[in-house]
Image 1 (cartoon, chains in turn cyan, green):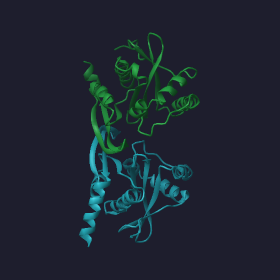
Image 2: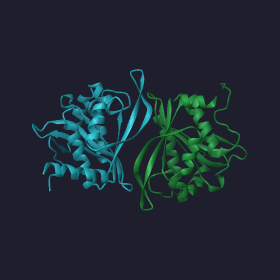
Image 3: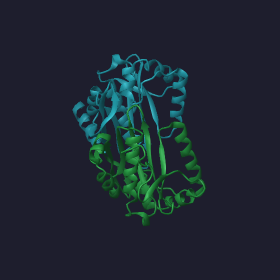
Image 4: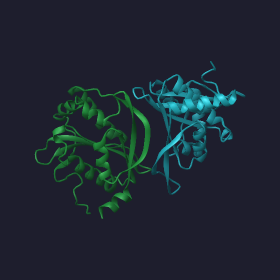
Length: 190
Length: 190
């Protein structure tokens, strides 16, 4: 069996809170990154503040946080995590962010998403994985579609930024859809 | 509409505060009613003792004070000040002007009396005319048909359908998000 946490461009690891906090604090300097990630106001996070947050996340049984590391150079370029896991419903949300913009639009995020989906379906036995993405994040939407997510609706004008309203788009992938896609991918590569 | 128009009083019911002495006993009784609990909550139904409810209501009130993004009301009859349900606006994002709305009438004997409809009317007015929100969302499971028809009657529309997000009674159900914009609500009043 192939290593569960390895993809074609990246692999997933879990790092100490301090490591993640240092990077998160640095990444928060890029307001575009923050605005793609969250609908709360973009703000700067101190290392101490970020570390407290990461430690709290690590304690939760409904959260699995990973660092995304490049296979080439082993550099941490972002984070991906499952949260809001409802074990009885076998359903959860996924969130992903590449803090290093030079890796945007090159397949690194999609690769990380494929790994975390495999982890969610094959290890955590989820029945579905959900996500939300903002209307202005077209690159994200394309990446999620490539990873197999289907649009399930949009909350109209949920975000107010730059003096206009933007929709929040909801996407989901079901276990059967994922299995079928993986099967097709396997057949293509062999 | 005028400033003197009462926000909390309808013909039949009022949006009241929590009575920490008397309410826990009644709420505890509701939590033992699986029918009610499964309509209101996605997490597994689990009854709460009077003491547990008391603690929960205290925590709720503390979070209302600390976080300032939650408004929780206990619905009481105008005629005899009897607790019949609860209603709340939660997860309010002040920068985006958005929030979630939910309400429940506890005892089956109090259904079909117009309490829910009137509560929803008051809560919408409170959300749009006092909190100045731009939009509201309501999360409703596929199997909660009464809630769907209540929110539709208040001109909410289905915005998102998370397919097979829930599992109950050995089958999977969709989770629906209904939405209402302030401008649509205001037009509807004309």
